[in-house]
Length: 307
Image 1 (cartoon, rainbow, N blue to C red):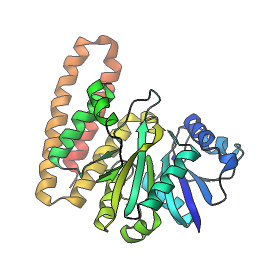
Image 2 (cartoon, one colour; image 1 turned 135 degrees about the horizontal axis):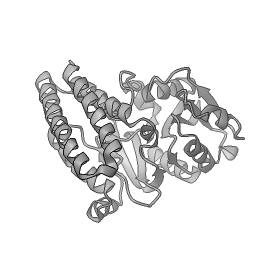
Image 3 (cartoon, rainbow, N blue to C red; image 1 turned 180 degrees about the vertical axis):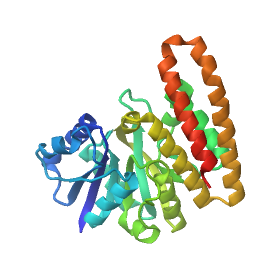
């Protein structure tokens, strides 16, 4: 059994995947590490490109894109290890940071999953953890996430103040270190998710099995957030809503699920009626706004028909 298997999930981010492997220094990977690149049938030639990179790692090109959890589970099953690091292809993690993460887990045996502190390439902190999704926690997270996305200094200061490791309900799957013993109790990723919420679901089950989830600010990683989703923003939005609905149905009672669905429909319908006004006020953004309206209509139809 290996000490660590690094599982990199890629879809259509060829250049970022190359950078991810370069930063990992795959030519000099320790003997007790395994690296598996799972390519979700990317049309940009990612799998062919990465096979030309020298280093000790395995490339698996899947015949179809069946989602993040499906690919991650294949990687976990292929390589029995004490720990598994799930990485997005748009992340950058150095070996010294890997060693710090493993040391942290070895010193804290009650932790089943953890993440380093994520920053973007402008050294701005990212919100890569959260509370269990409820109506109130989702509103609070939305406010903080929007502030971070818009570069608000107060939001960045709030995150930068966090210096010591702390416990949370879940950590993001973009840089998630998992303990095999925790997976043995909680199970693997739920493949009913395609992308989004699969990390929250897994962490919820890990916590339910008696383990803790942690964030370690002393260890840093870079994450170019959302690059895969940018290649098809409408489908990414639909996957988000479908996963959100499935998560709510799985982890909340029926009344809570119906209330959440009603709130989502109301929110998206208001947005739909505001878009024509925005189009009139900004002719230069008409194409982008029309595409946003198309995505909203598809999301509304999905939510209306989801049972």
